[in-house]
Length: 191
Ligand code: IMP
Image (cartoon, rainbow, N blue to C red; front, side, top):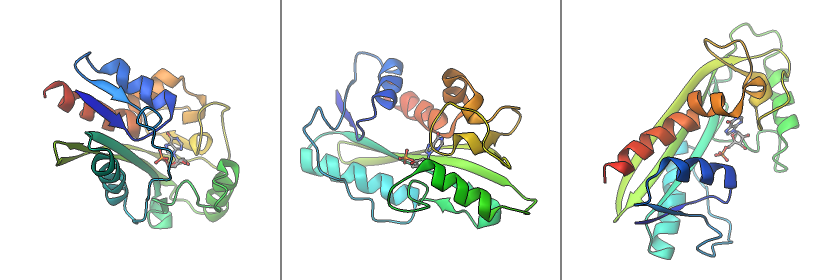
């Protein structure tokens, strides 16, 4: 079966293809010659992931899955959430996004947060959702050099390192995206 992952992020693609059997051939957006901006108009991760997957499966008549992720901070009523990528503006600048979060949490004791990923899968017009959550805390300052996005200010519960200090293998094993992806793979391998 051919299956499109609605991304061109080679790291995400490799991660999933490595876990799938030869039964499933994973294709990127480049592979299907999709270069347009895929709409993400909603204010929940579920609706955005579904919108992206529906767009591709309808326009290209192919089975597809898409993901959407947000950092949800308890003291900020779940913000930045679905707006995580552009929290500090349209330039999608990770440093500015982290600085905004650190400013907003200055002097606030409750620093509980979670990353949440939703994957929407469409197979033969049937829709399925898979969720992955990792709970943690927002640190008081940036810590660690690796990773991307909000990794330097997020420390998962039961670990002493921030995501930006962890090996990629450990992060993938315990992360929101890792957990959602493992659920997707388990489902696909049963097909
Ligand atoms: P996306 O839905 O995967 O594009 O994620 C949306 C935004 O959430 C990204 O632009 C990042 O700012 C943030 N984000 C997603 N996953 C992670 C992660 O694993 N670590 C840190 N930030 C992340």
